[in-house]
Amino acid sequence: MRKNLMKKLTSMLLVSSMVVSLSGCGGGKKEDEVITLEVYSQTANYSGMQAGWIADIFKEKLNVQLNIIPDGNGVYETRMEDGDLGDIIVWKNDSDQYPDAVKNKMLYDWNEDDVLSDFGPYIKEHMQEALKKNQNLTSDITDGERDTLYGFGYDVATSYSEHASFFYTWDVRWDLYKQLGYPEVKNLEDFKKLMKDMTELCPEDDSGNKTYAVSLWPEWDDAMVMYVKAMATAYYGYEELELGLVDLQTGEYHDALEKDGPYLEMLKFFNDLYQEGMLDPDSMTQNYEKMIAKVQNGGTMFSIFNYSGQLAYNKPVHLEEGKMMFCMRPEEATPIAYGMNPQGGDRIWTIGAKTEYPEKCMEVLNWLSTPEGKMIETYGPKEICWDYDKEGNPYLTELGKNCQKSKSTTKMGNGYKGTFQDGSLQIVNTTWSLDAKNPEANGETYNYINWKSTLDENKTAIEADWREKTGCTGINDYMEKSNYVLKPGTSYAKTPKEPEFRTTWSQVTNEIKNGSWKAMYAESDKEFDKIVSDMTKKCQKYGYDKCVEWSIKEAKRLKALCDESLAKIEAEEKAGADSNSDAKKEDAE
Image (cartoon, rainbow, N blue to C red; front, side):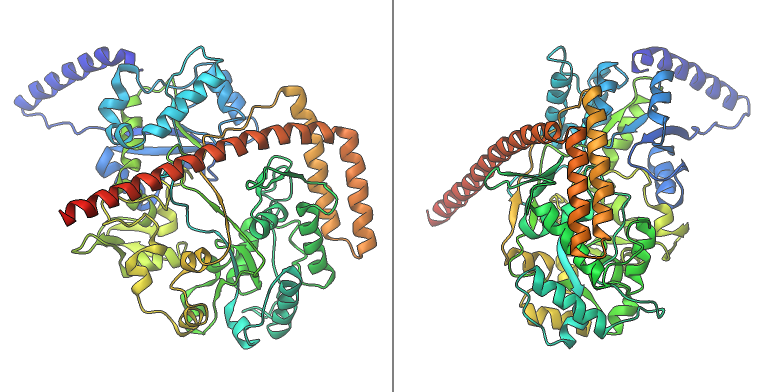
């Protein structure tokens, strides 16, 4: 513990004097041993020592190696009983298990013995709002008893006034759209027709398997089926929240089982696709990896998400063949855009109270929060995968480009073993938002998609066709010119559920998920209506109304905080406008 620092320093001085004495007697100088930090990450899917290129960089720069422990059944409970959560702990959210750790003082106080000031100076100087949010969260959890600083949330931004890059991008097979003559797509009915035309035009994937409009997966389902609620967010711009969706412009809440509501509307959309043979029949049983492999193999025609659309399909071989998935939003769709949040999100970086190395833990988190650390963690070693040009603009090297396009197959070389994916940080959390401004990058963000070097580079013929047809230079340019809904960054944190209510919530949400999948696979409209009716009755029996009532309260809290953030954005923009006006006056004088 840091409180034993003097004892440790004394021991280190003794060891140092012994080494000096031994070296004077002809003994060799002992090198510092690499410290192993145990990282318990509730967001990780990997177990074991961090490997690959980033492991080498951690050893070289910080003299540490990371042993990653993912979450699983009973893992959290066992570690709590043992009284030791680990050295670095990453929480999947700040509302489920995190409050118990705070109440039981299982986390390290970042202000103890000035650990933050001495070993986390970049965090302290540049993430003040995120740190303050964590202290306020502690105060809420402990009913005002203390406001101890335990960490900060992920995806920290540098400003409220900008939003993150769109990821509800409505990607379709643009090459097929072109072959069909660029048909007008106003609404979901037009979109379904487009999917039918596309699957008929391209009935087989790269391996000769049947193609589908879309392929889903169930492992990311929470209170509802993930892709169904996300479809409503992508089309209406409603924010998914607990047991439904909230219209942040009006504050109206649409619960999952609302008759003719957005969730059931989108559920019917996918059932329509199924009835017409356009929904991958494996959707209910496959995992994300199997789904994404089908996308990469050309087995799907659209995705509302960029990561299961363009980012997966647009391999060099497809682009060279004149094939591409890219944005084609229905005219009536108003997808949501997520505002930047200097307070960070709900996945929290913390340090365990029992760690023997709080200074080293803080050094790791601080380095990951520096521009250099963020760039290396995201794109690989500097000069090998990326660098800055003479004007300070960031760019990817050829290897860096290949690493982003084919992470799992691109060999690193240059003294590093394995592929880029092998060396990717397996903690699965971020410090800065990818769309935050990089202070070392001449006004650019950390997101290479929007770098000047990326937008200016030569494109393939099919990419050039998209640009010519849309009149846009890239994704954000295209989406910005369309209607969208802004969800500003806020300090919102879910209210923890009481144990008894958790049981009710679990029964209701499990029924909604199971019933939704059954309805999606209904063979007729009549069967669909019957399944939805039965699902509704069962949910009412379990306590659905109580869950909706709770969700509406959460929606009201979120709406109020969004309104506060919008006021901050207006203030930022006004301050910027006033600053520009003053600058012009000075120039004129």
